Image (cartoon, rainbow, N blue to C red; front, side, top):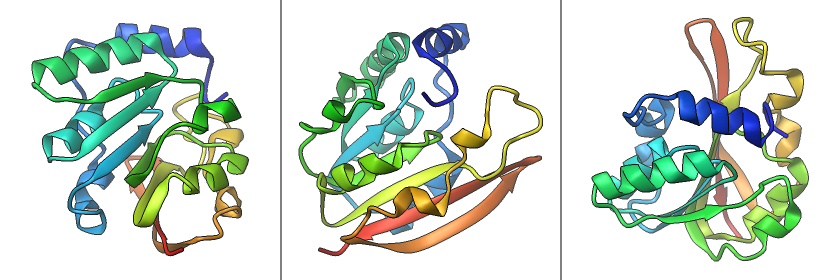
Length: 188
């Protein structure tokens, strides 16, 4: 389980203020890499900062998280912004959660380390020419004891992606924290 169980994440989302956080800056900066329109799957979406951003830019978004509090908050933010967003509550650590998603032009995974054996399954839900955008921790931050080595995104996470090519990989810093972002495109 990435950085905690359901109780950990429900408590974290309950403690947040009433305002939606800003979308991930790296995602905003990467819009030129992404399809201009289409269907988006936002995995481990939390309370929807990236979901709402993408939906407000005309994408048809399906958002997935396992925290019921995050889902409730996302639904409120979607309603406040008059956005039509499909929301699913699923445990992303369970293989059966990936079986009925459909096809997408863009899949976003932000600050969640997907188990590497799920990438080939996820790749099947990406349309040809579609983009898989993955962003997360590159090094364990010294200022957050909840984040462990097992939460770091590594190149080996993607070894099962056989029909996609990595178009861009960027390591960047925000303050003292190091992150890595991958952009994969499905070619076959």
